Amino acid sequence: MALYTVFGGRGFIGSEIVNQLQAQGHSTFVPARDDTSLFERDLGIVLYCAGNGDCKNTPFSVLEANVSLLAQLLQHAKFERLLYVSSTRVYMNQALANEQANLTVCVDDNRRLFNLTKLVAEELCLKSGRNVCIVRPSNVYGVALNSSLFLPAITRNAINHGKVDMYIAKDYAKDYVSVKDVASSCIEIASTDQCHNQTINVAAGYNITAKQIADVLQEYTQCEIIWHEIDFPNESFPITDITTINELITNFTPNNVLVDLKDMITEFTKVLRTN
Image (tube, rainbow, N blue to C red):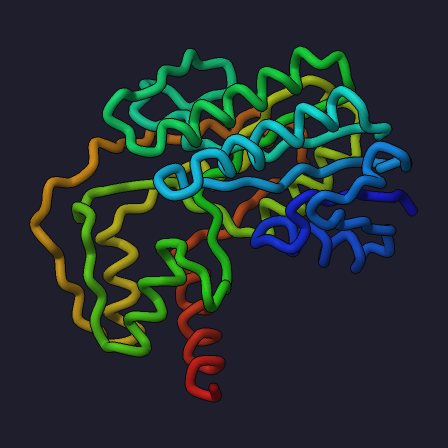
């Protein structure tokens, strides 16, 4: 069995990766913050899931988590291979969402620092001369009871309060991918040398609208959906191209968020009502 070092291994995506690796019998190392042993030991196969997206409140932490530590690892750490977890948010307001598409940064995007740091990190990986690959997951979902992410937050509100305030347009659409699918894909990609210096989308390959999600919540919780008329953000997402990952992973069949949302409601209801 191999050794895997998972940065961000206590986070949403990273903890699922660690769980799956350990279930497969692999050795895992989840470094603590400021662990000085990182540059003295063999890290084996590295999965870099550390990240920060709070551009408003912690901009310097966004830089540190998304770029700075990665740069040090690429320069000084001993590892067999490194997989960097980026994001399909870099495709926002673009014409195409494939790995070879030209990308621009939108001046009216209040989280453009996130996109910039992800793109800088990707370029550092590709220019480092090390054995690296990059994955761009779409919007990751899963049962995360205390998460501030969109799906867990509105599911909690539907169950606890019987209503959901929606501050996005009904036709606002994104690609959603299960954290379990992201984790298993990252492990498989990181474990093969055929993905050297590649960038790979990990997504469902189709968009789901806010109205479709609201309809499921309403049907299974009988909650009230309140659509607020506000100035909606200038955000649109093209369909994410999953051709590359379909070529790399046999029988890549990501879950459908609308199907999984029903299971999330059941799980949330069970846990929330026993606490």
